[in-house]
Length: 246
Image (tube, rainbow, N blue to C red; front, side, top):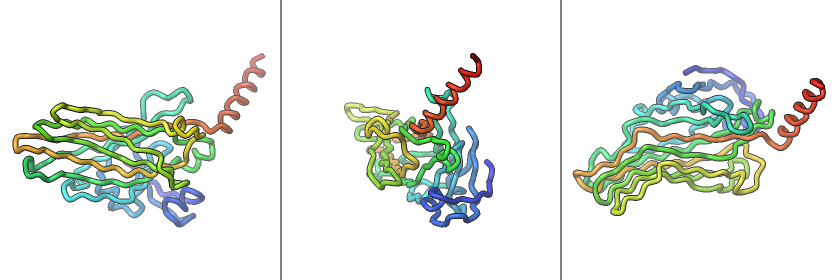
């Protein structure tokens, strides 16, 4: 984990901080680097940078899961997509679960944050496209469940893009989905997005005293694409290089 002092300005600064040109200390995570969620929430700006993505953590509420016991792990995919970009995101790891099974209480946490393309990368034509949610939740006992649901908005247009859900419902019958994703560029025929607003809700319920509902990690990752203008520049650069080789 590193701290970077930088000037946050322009569209991103206006959106995330509301104060363009103000110095800001950002927590910088590389792939596999860690910081406690509590430390992020206690920082002045609540901002984390992972590769070319900026995450601003607006709120966290839970009466069951202490954020100081939740670890954020930077995630940068090993393999690039067809455009040469790597998925970027983070894992939340910790003792998620229903700690008092059978008491008919759902153990829950809600996290709201914004993910945005770093202004320099955005100027180069990098855009957000899809969102992917993964966890390793499991449950036992009739009526128990572990699940994460999230709602995603286009931050600039303030419009709903969609919902993702992962879950393990013990049933009967058992119903399990450990990964969910949506490509909003494809769904809405969009050229890409600058920023998403994400509202994530984690719930764990062990219906019986002998039941369980747990998870040890929740992963969030976002793909990225070049804007049409950037694709044109890439194509022009390739054409120039081809002519030079000839």
